[in-house]
Length: 278
Image 1 (spheres, rainbow, N blue to C red):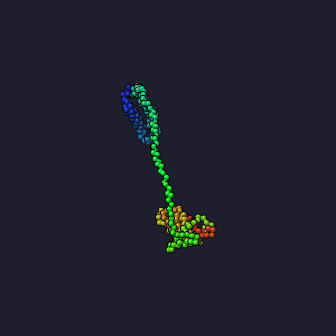
Image 2: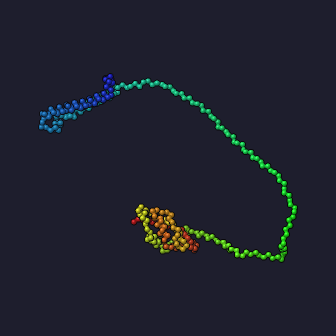
Image 3: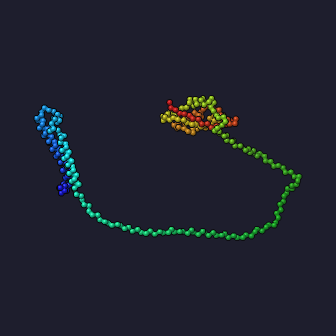
């Protein structure tokens, strides 16, 4: 048996298994067709569904047990044949031994110590002794033609046509307060002020196109005369809204200036301006 399997090989066994399966299937169909035709000749007026239930010869399911057992037996035979198929001899393993690696001994080279160069010699300058200068004993006579006594009066010297020099005092920088005793406020109240802002505000086209909304915080100075100056955005939303808020604040009417200790002073103010699309 083993010699036959070796002769056939795995490909031959596979073909044999497929051929056996096809043969069993064809044999089963042949038996069922033959039995069915024989019964239908004697029972021509009975329907096929009734015949298959009434006559066992027509019932094809009664052969499924036989077919299952044959298929199982054939499968087991093929599996056993595959296990019995001899394996190739891989040969004896040869011991190649161990490879001895020789390592060269690394000698430690001590670091080279370089001595610092000697300091350069400084040549001492030659100090030459110089004799002291001879003292001049000759007296110098100074002849003054002017005689001054106790009764001599010295007139005051005056300079005419001299330009007058005036010292200009630098003006002191006026302090700008953040918090004062009496804060600055719009004349008529914040309600009137925000009505002015709302009436004069123009929503920028770019902000409208980009659907930009939010608050712009504008800082400005309320001067001593109540005028709003140096307006600038300290936190904005862009898209032209910051410039529009500064423009309207710069054109706003005067405020009531702030006071500190009864004196009118400048004051920083910050107000929010909302931009909302309707």
